[in-house]
Amino acid sequence: MNSKEFTQSLMHATSLKKDVVEMCTLQLTNILTSHLCDGESVSIQGFGTFEVRKKNERISVHPKTQERTLIPPKLTMNFKQSSTLKEKLTKKGDEL
Image (spheres, rainbow, N blue to C red):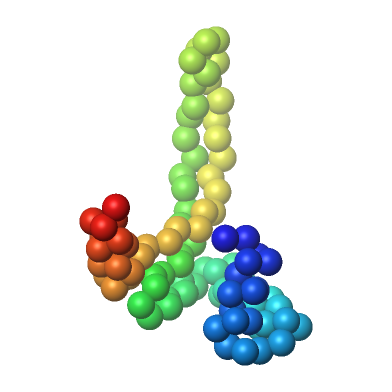
């Protein structure tokens, strides 16, 4: 599902106008981004938790040349699904 499809789906589910739905999704992403950039985790009940994790620096070896490269530390976003979502996905997978 892309952004346009998400907007259409949300419009249909809520009977809100397109500009209102687009504004809400923009504000939602801005709020999530702001909290994640501040190092806070964001939990959505029944869906899951988004959190920022630090990846330590590591050494990478090129398989052909055996050249070693130092990869610097970086921050990545991690998502952990809730048990409710996990159960729903498991049930859906069993149906296939």
